[in-house]
Image 1 (cartoon, rainbow, N blue to C red):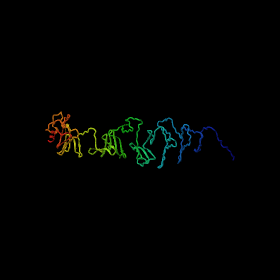
Image 2: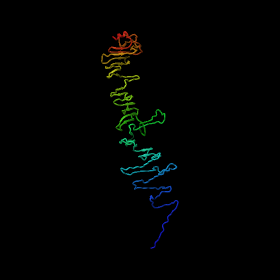
Image 3: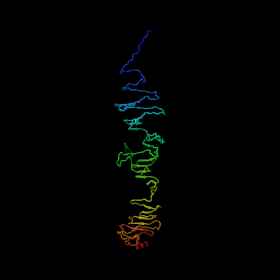
Image 4: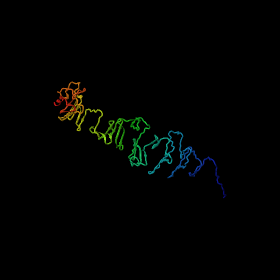
Length: 441
C-alpha cells in the first residue's frame, strides 16, 4: 500500500479587524479578558442565559474594586437604559424586571436587595421619577401601598406587645377594617415620660394670622362624588379609651359645635354627664375649688371649699323660693304663701303693696327687724296716695314727720304683718309716743 503524507492546515495570523461569520461552539470559560471596550449590537436578537443547575453562588457576578473615580465623578457598575417611542399604546415597557417565585415553606424569597454604605452619603435606593407601588402594578401616587400596613420599627425598641404590631414597632398605619377601609394610626412608646404619638403643627412665620390654626382637623361625609360637612347631630370628633367597638367614649364633638363629656349626644354647647360631680372650677388643684353637682331630681348643688358664693350682679329668682336646710321655704318670691313658709316677700304688683310677712304652721311666729347703723328703719306712705294707715294698723292716722316716719319717693306702701309682737331695733332716739301706743295696741 502506498502511503500518503499530508501537511497540517495553515494558521492565519493577522492584525486588525476580522469581519465574518463563524460556525461552531466555544465554551463561556474560554473567553479571556478583553484588551479593549466590547460592544455588541444585537439588533432584534435576544440573548438567553439559563442556570438550571445553580444551587448556590451567583449566576452573574459583576464587581469592581476600582477606587479611581472618573472625571465626571460618576461611575456605574451596571447601566440599563431604554428609550424610544412605543408604537402600541397598550404596551408596557420594563427597564428592569425581577421576579423570584421559588417555593418552600421555610425559605425566604427576596425580589430585590439594595444596600449602600461606606461613603459620607449613602442612599440605598433612589427613584428619580415615577410612582412607586407596593402590592400593586398601577400605583396612583408617589407611594402606593396596596392592601397592607405601613410599619416603622426600631431595633432599640421592645415593648412586648404582639397583638396588633411587632414588638419592635414604633408606628403602624393600617386599615381599621379589612373590607370597609378606614385608616388606623398607632404609635408606641416604651417610656412613661414620652407619648405614643406626638402631633405638632408649626406656622412658619413670626406673626401668623390670629385665626389661622397651627393644627386643623376637619370631619366630613360623602355626598355623591364629593365630600360635605357633617350634620348638626353627627359626630365630628371623638376621644375614647379601649379597643374600638368595646371602648369607652370620653369626649364627643357634634356638627353643631356641642361638646359632650361622658356623653355621645350633648344637648348644649357643653354637656357633662356623670352621676357624681359634673363640673369643678379650680384655683388650686385638689384644695381650692367650687364643685357643681346635679342630682337625679335635677337639683344643683354648689359646694365651695371657701365660705361664700358671691354674685357680682343682680340675682333674679322667678317663681321660686329660698329654702332652709330642711327644704322648707325661708323666703318665697310669689303671691301665694304655703303652710310651711317662715317668711314671705310679696311682689307689689299683685296688690299695690310690698308685703313682708311672717307666717307658717305655728300661730306664734314673730317678725323681728333689726336696723343697725346711722340709718333708721323708714316706712312712709307715698305722697301721691291718699293718707293710709301706717304699719298696717287700720285705726292709726298718718303720723307726723319724724326720724321714724319720713316722706319717701313715690312707691307703694310698705306693709309689715306679724302674728306675734313686732320687734324693731334701731340706734335712733326713742320712737314717738304715737308709735309706742300703736306697738302696745
